[in-house]
Amino acid sequence: MKEYTCHHCEHQVTSIHPVTFYEQERERNELLCDDCYSEWLESMKG
Image 1 (cartoon, rainbow, N blue to C red):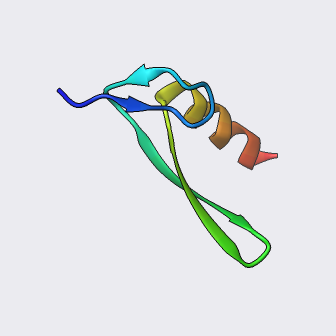
Image 2: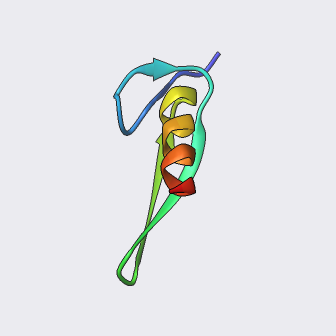
């Protein structure tokens, strides 16, 4: 089973969520674990 590293918390996980962040005119693709992805979604709700 492949392991990934979460960009935010740096934990090694087997399940990952690809997320694209837009900064000014650039795109940045990052991988987030389930917990960090959930937190990111909550922060998008405002």
